[in-house]
Length: 330
Image 1 (cartoon, rainbow, N blue to C red):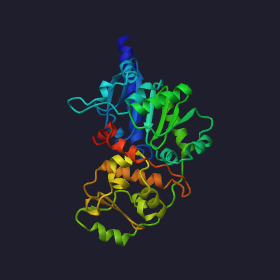
Image 2 (image 1 turned 180 degrees about the horizontal axis):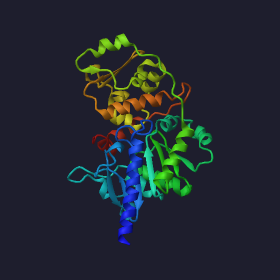
Image 3 (image 1 turned 135 degrees about the vertical axis):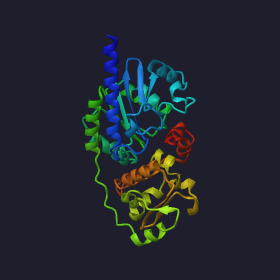
Image 4 (image 1 turned 90 degrees about the horizontal axis):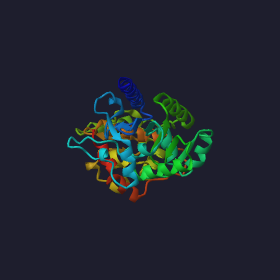
């Protein structure tokens, strides 16, 4: 009997790893180390380790086992879940472990879907999504900081609608839940199809201006040409200049946070109005991916859309919370 249980457990963990790798290969769903997946097996919650990339899900240290009963007890007592606190090696479970623990579903998938975020940063998002997601058991979660606060918000939502298995997180992302990795994948595909937005075409970047600027020793062009839309497209430039759309923008790209703006000489990213984008050569792969994701989000926001930006206090909470440290573990 024990051998069968062990074999079944391994099969379920392998399925989660395979799904995670698949998700990590889609930049419209995952950028760098963002997002998290989990599966509940017996009394354990197996969840992505903080700072790990989905594309590396086959690594031995990708998943961490969390005592599910203890995690739920910690949440009820307003205590930290032990596995989310860094071990001597610096390894710990995702900051969203509490959210995964309170959800009753076997498999939980949290992604930073570009399409979902493009709707989730709109003040009229709930009304539009009501039409897009009609027939699905979905619910809207107003912006809530990652960690315990988000877990409690999810818990309240499930209490109000026990059948909910799709959660749109305002200014954050998307969560889908199911009884298996395969059914979670299918549900995610359906939600993505319903939320799909065709990106707005961007003007061609100013090749001559960018070439001259990029000739400086410390500067280079971004890895993906779509990033130039942030400056070449006047509407995109206006949206980005208006504030912070979601936490990862503040965590990975502080130069694009208005309240943290610095002189050009100290910046890692520079938007040249109506021309394009320049990046410091020291920018990490994670920053490049998040920058590309930001460009893809704003190209899906209509010019007349009422945008809801993070407040100054919410930005402060992001940059001083546990998710920030986890994001920097690459």
